[in-house]
Length: 100
Image (cartoon, rainbow, N blue to C red; front, side, top):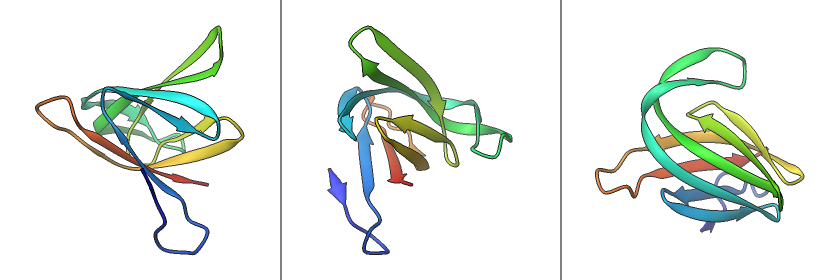
């Protein structure tokens, strides 16, 4: 789902746990949301709700990222900032990201 919020050019994506989303032409799998350590974009360590993101950048390549609020990851030609991670007891949590 693509939502346009804030500035005219802001693109916000909501990724649902246990699904695969297409970001900038690249498949990204989302799963395993729980409280744990992760790294923010500024290099600071944090502990909180975080998700496993699997970025399938080539047919035989998969990059694994543990991402929480403040993390940044690459998918295709774009970088994405994690804005929030919400847990759900039925494995349907949500990761909200913004294209940078």
